[in-house]
Length: 247
Ligand code: NAP
Image (cartoon, rainbow, N blue to C red; front, side):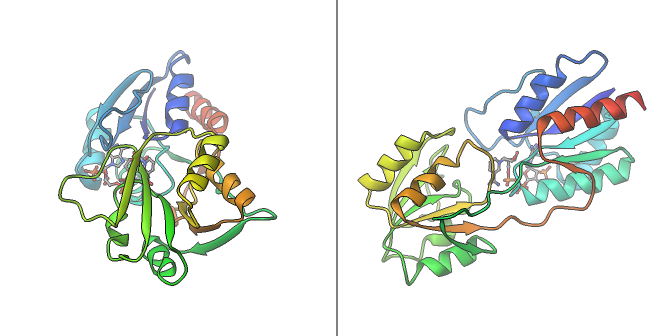
């Protein structure tokens, strides 16, 4: 039995580590290659795009993959769609492993928006100093907001000629601690955080810190995922694998 895990998340790495100990299942993890020094999962792995649905279907076929687990980030929409289509083409079972979204609790001041573009629009009239925590790929969407100062957190700095908003970069990788997040918000006199609703614990501390300091959070809602089997934690994904490997 050979399983391909579409990765790039903590859950994908955790799953690869658990499956590596199961006899009779071989695991290959796939990373997009976006970060310069990715966290390398346990077991076999490959890096880089497949070349769309056709490329992925070809890979699944060539490598005799029996099962596909899409454990990519909830905002990796293209990869999720490609995974779903390719699994249908080569007729193998596919599972989506996706952590639950965060839910606003008492004291949270969230403004939920549908996408990154809407997040940029709502900042225009209400924010002066923004903590932008959406990664580096889409920061260009905020580049026209000249009246706002941005603290932009991302793993690697943007490309040299990339369009970026005014402000400074903070290159760091989660998990982030509450006391550090609190300090960042206070030190930079942040009034608004922009975040994707990624879910999970690794990047949740900024949401708690914002609640404590009564700051606004512009929360980008999750995009829809392709229909199909879905679980929210690693153990449930392992159970799914075991069921399919005996069947
Ligand atoms: P995306 O927009 O959905 O995918 C764009 C293209 O990148 C895909 O069509 C595919 O290229 C390639 N790709 C994406 N994930 C891949 C993977 N795991 N293995 C091989 N190729 C992959 O993806 P994205 O939002 O840029 O995310 C890229 C990676 O970063 C993913 O692994 C994701 O889990 C991780 N990540 C994303 C976010 C986020 O906010 N989007 C946050 C944290 C981590 P081809 O069409 O050529 O196959």
